[in-house]
Length: 238
Image (tube, rainbow, N blue to C red; front, top):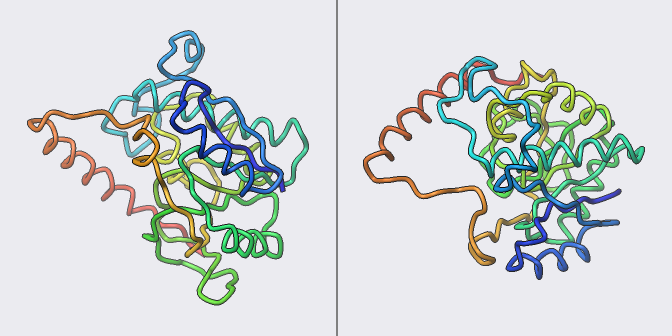
């Protein structure tokens, strides 16, 4: 299986981890990320902040979030252009357990189709609507509510084509958009536990998050809670 590691060349503190991922991931290459801080790189992006789909997303897209979304779209396009049935797409703050990753990829090889999008998240917060397969405690599931973050996933060619068609205009971050399976027509599966970890704090911190004034934090949390409540009205079904 081909692996694609999304990385900004200027993120020098993450370079050592990229070298580790090139060793730990199967048939890995680095895909240059879209830099949302460079207006020229995102000038042509079609966007409609939070208003294209319901529920409306309560926050405007940040430049870094636009860059991350376009970086994932770049990988989805490469899956099609290079003729892969599947590819593993990883962000550069991922740390894997090679043995457990090998088991997860074996589950995928045995049970997945190119129509599937399978998350290997760092947080075990999803509950299954259906269990498709298992290897000991490790399970390939269809979660009721799709989790956040896109640090590691296996994307089939059919899923890549479907998602590219659905994201010619973007209105929210990529992980939040992927939760909207009733809009994309793309079910999202998950493998848990998988041994993955996020190590952004060890290699320079997040490239997306920004500081929010204390006076605005409560308002943001209220808006986020209301949005999540609306999202929970749309669980995935077996």
